[in-house]
Image (cartoon, rainbow, N blue to C red; front, side, top):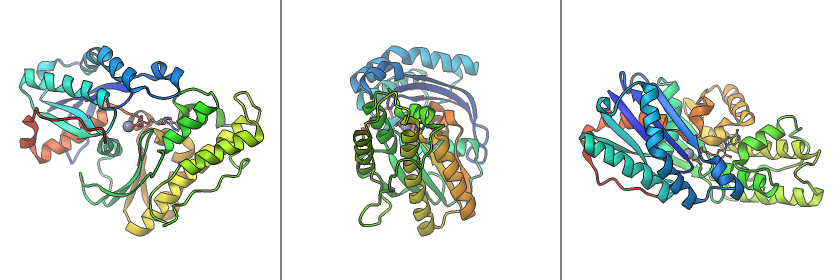
Length: 338
Ligand code: KG4
Ligand code: ZN
């Protein structure tokens, strides 16, 4: 079975073709996974401009889907199943992918599976490691979301905690924007902070008052802005690497501390880390170190599967379809922002 998957929830236009082998026992084979980033479009604004994002998707979606098919070496007539992100995300962006996928499915009389973007991010971990042992504790950390899930079995997600204000990626993006370092902030902070000493600037790991598993990054952002003002840190400052390393370090510590608390509570067999911020080396290392100490199996997708991509959408659609094939002739699928 061949699936064509489309992802346009935010500022990446992506199309992927996957071949199902023996879902869910074996992971599908990713024949292509094309991702066109809109970073250049949004960089001047220091963040994603929703109106520009949807217009850009409209301009590029047909070419990206064609490229996905060409790289996979298949034509539309060979596709058995269509998959698309329904939400959450920017509504205008989501509607571009959804409408495009509906059109293809309708014309070719093939089923269409709508996919949740957050569940797709978690699925990226299983795409490379189909045998992850349940129960699985998952940390999803991206530009729009920071959340902890307990997965007792495939396709089951219990939310254990989420951010009460900014997402971790959003905090990185905002500090980078404030310093005039460009967008997206995470990669540039990682690059410039690589050689910095993360112990230079004292940041305390934030805790919610009720000691819940919820996250809060707005306090950290305020603390960072205070350091910037008090120490007069600017874009070309010699102290910038130390400052960025310190900020990135406390974000990573905060995330992994929450995973540790959640693991104490729910006693998982495995832990997984996903979402755009999971590309971050400091976070990946800290997460793996924690898992080793705790005696847990840890999985982090390869960097390309951490940021938004259609392969993860196709992978979860195949699992959903294998479980409930009847569901998918539905052309009434609607997008949802949250
Ligand atoms: O998952 P994603 O592509 O889109 C959302 O669903 O939000 O994540 C984008 C986020 C941005 O906030 C970006 O700054 C962050 O991921 N990011 C990183 C790195 N690469 C991307 N954060 C830290 N280190 C990185 N290397
Ligand atoms: Zn995402």
